[in-house]
Image (cartoon, rainbow, N blue to C red; front, top):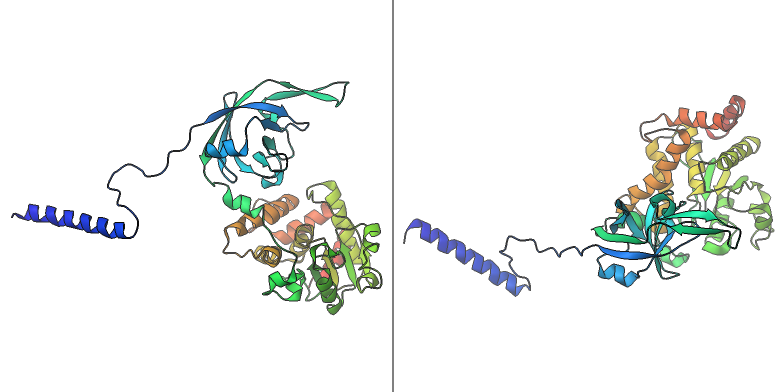
Length: 391
């Protein structure tokens, strides 16, 4: 037997041996060159069922039909409207995408599939319909221009990390957070960053509202920290004083301001509330406590601005912000959702407020001072604010 034949026989024996081993382990050897990936279902066309008041386009299809055509929650799909194609994710709420972005929404409450824009009109943007004002109720009607839409899956689970980051879940039971201290469970902590005085500024979930099951722990922690002044970003004065937990509490002995902070961080209203909060710090003594309901979003952005102002580094501000997501949801820097939350919730908002392009490289201290000046604070007031909080 020549050398070539020996090599051929040896190769065949190896293939047979591998096939035998794989068979024993419940798999098969694919010697074909073609891909084993299942074929992507073809696009299918649906009709426009209706257009809502705000321009959401309800489709004449169902969740099951979408799934049978290879499209499900957290997939990215291509929507073809009158010759124009739009790539957008499938989600369950408008907030699964940023303001101004498109979404295919599985409306679980009404059992409908709709194409929408968060804070916008999908029908108007895509030319599907024109909204007309009429005298009869309800005061408007849609002049439909396009009746058919084609849908196709572009990327299975291509939006999964973003979707998960926007749909975190938690409980409000202390026993479910055995690894956390009482202070961590209450999302209570001192803001400890470069430039900030030690134990002067604290942040927390609400010490007075029982709804999320953390108030008694936050109340104990603020008393232990000897908090003197409180910025309550969540409640009006009327709501606050009517909580059963408020009268005769340590909280009620503090100096308190109730700016009722908005979530619309780029608005004049938000800037007004920031100024009110900063002037309150100037006019009152610390230690100070800032809280909203959970102490992560409105509290997080206000704290970030103050941290920038005293000279904290970007990494420190990010770590402080994201600690709330660990305390509530167990999110760590190893999770795929970590950087998405950080970018969407902190970096985007701070960059917008301070008018910077790069959160990590910008002179945050200088830009924060410019921001406070832009919202109407004087140099003298900022000097006192720096003296109150900064080293």
